[in-house]
Image (spheres, rainbow, N blue to C red):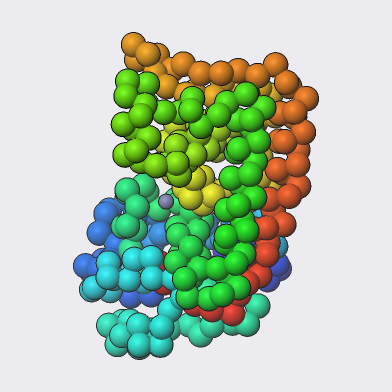
Length: 288
Ligand SMILES: [Zn+2]
């Protein structure tokens, strides 16, 4: 089978290496037909490489099909014994870590609720792997924390611009009980999530599909890797606080200037934090 890619483009592509390991016709961590087709089907590796073409960071992405692959979901930074086990199961050596690159071995598509293994979801899953790395590496831990903090700060500022406070997100029927049940953090998260759904520009946000603020962070990372930038809506939206008779109720803001400023600053500031995290993540192999 001939390579049809333009070679100069491969050299410049941020995904500097991509490949399949193991036999996707055999059982392994990838169990769904859709996922197998999306990573191992004809032309798919080139398509993934192209879709990730807007990032400056050097990624090496591998999709490995082997029995027991599901056990390696969201492992973060690979331990030597894990790599040895996978090599034994595959019957061949794995790619080595490269100092200036982020190497990821995808062993399955489980963990989260299932979504097909598109280039976007692959980027989202990378977020999960890095988040696990937070617990394994101090610098990754600090940079991931900083990234989550800067994103939550913007989400808080957006709801501030709407004059919304935590109390607006208490469940309406029995607020006191809800409060004691979930505590302060939970209400804060609900408030942030409402901002993310109102102002996030990716499909999951527009569809109200984000489960928590971390998911919004991973979606923002995916947006950055695939589009080269991050974006919030720059026009006032309704932030939904609750539903009444099945209809979303919420708050709009007249402060269009504040929304525009926050949206613009988010676009400048957040990529710097993502870049820091990705720099910290280099030189290691991640298992996802
Ligand atoms: Zn997720």
